Image 1 (cartoon, rainbow, N blue to C red):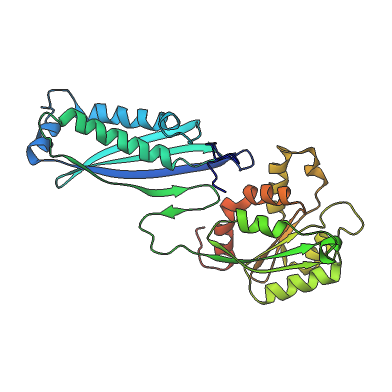
Image 2: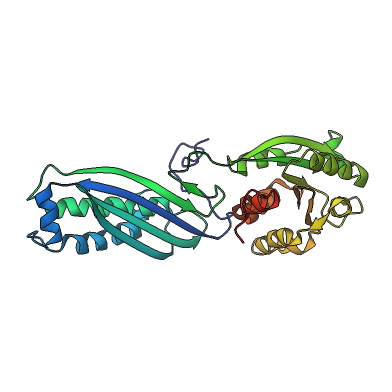
Length: 317
């Protein structure tokens, strides 16, 4: 189903209520190709309509702020900052726009709209002098924040991470109930995460331990469990996990609980934990599909960095 169409085929805005609030940044860039005499006129403020760069800078800022009005399915955002920079390079006047916000959706469209508005304003200011101008190469340079992680236009290859999912459930392992959580992992995890293994086991501490030991021995960097984190006597996933951990990383589970606190009063009933065995990060998630989705949104923006540090592939400290 198309995300921007409802069940009747009519337009809708994507529901982002379950996404986590993170610091989002986007940088976009574009250029306008000008004649030499036009460039000189701009630099020397000889364009009859006024100071081209000053007015174009305001237009770019206005374009950023007007994005949700111009782009039908874009969400209105409370922006934290907008930075606009114009600079000359040969016969090009480049416009670069950086946008930041603290929110639940990215600011790529805002940055791209800002560049477009700024360059179009340059065209409008200079068209009496130069009708051969061409606007070129408007593109997203970089974005950070959100589940898709860090994107850079010039980055040739994006790092991927293998992960495994172990469902702990008596009724699902016996076939009495159908599991829906594995489908949620496939839907919500970013494309940079590769699901390499799934299994459904009973709520049995030894069986859960066997899976976690075997998967970490195979050096799968990220292992999720789902289910068995509540108050039932058969909920033993945290106990099984703690018995295989070399080190705890409980703050990951605390972050999930803090996120869940804004959604449900049941957040305090989760006994989930997280930890490290060898080179694998093991994270307990709840057993319901909705809670799995919310939990992933709560932590996904920081997982890549944590996995890089764990496997010694990046060390920024």
